[in-house]
Image 1 (cartoon, helix red, strand yellow):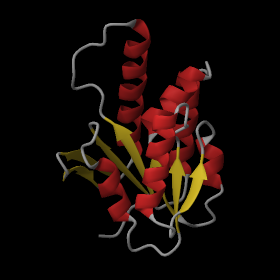
Image 2 (cartoon, rainbow, N blue to C red; image 1 turned 90 degrees about the vertical axis):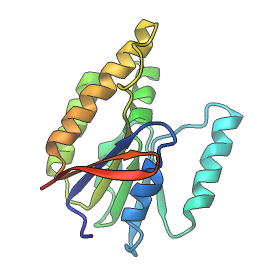
Image 3 (tube, helix red, strand yellow; image 1 turned 90 degrees about the horizontal axis):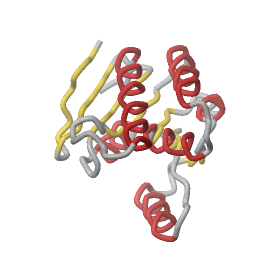
Image 4 (cartoon, one colour; image 1 turned 45 degrees about the vertical axis):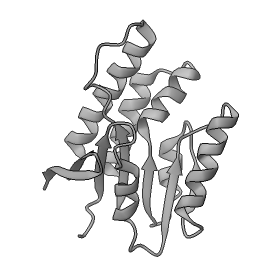
Amino acid sequence: MTLPRLTFVLGGARSGKSAYAESLLAGSSHRAYIATAQAFDQEMAARIAQHRLDRGEDWRTIDAPIDLCAAIGSLDGAAALLDCVTVWIGNLMHEERDVSAEIDNLVDYLAAAPGPLVVVSNEVGLGIVPDNAMARRFRDFAGRLNQKLAAIAPRVVLVTAGIPQILKDE
């Protein structure tokens, strides 16, 4: 399958979305992995290390917890996987950034960015309403970003239980 300029992959936690997104770039000899996760504790450091080990050495990893536009701009024609924008939202909230402005800036940048680029996000709106204001703000930011990314992406895929379902394919 030929990748469009932008593919948006979303799903729940442990749904298989990242593995699916990685498989989309399996045939690319020049590929990059834009990682948004930060190791705030030992458990997360171990997760990050395991992810890098699982991916293998043929991925160029770009750590970009905040400035995704600069990371995407540094690709030099490489196909890339951005994993994931919901972790990025958490990073922005942790840094007390203007999340709405950062989301708009990223979406504007992605609308014109060359590809192929695969963007991964968590679908966080399928559960109960969170019990605290910060978690509700996070859920709302993620939902708004997901809608905006789905609107500009030629291909949108929802992964559930490891099964990709194409929602949009222009």
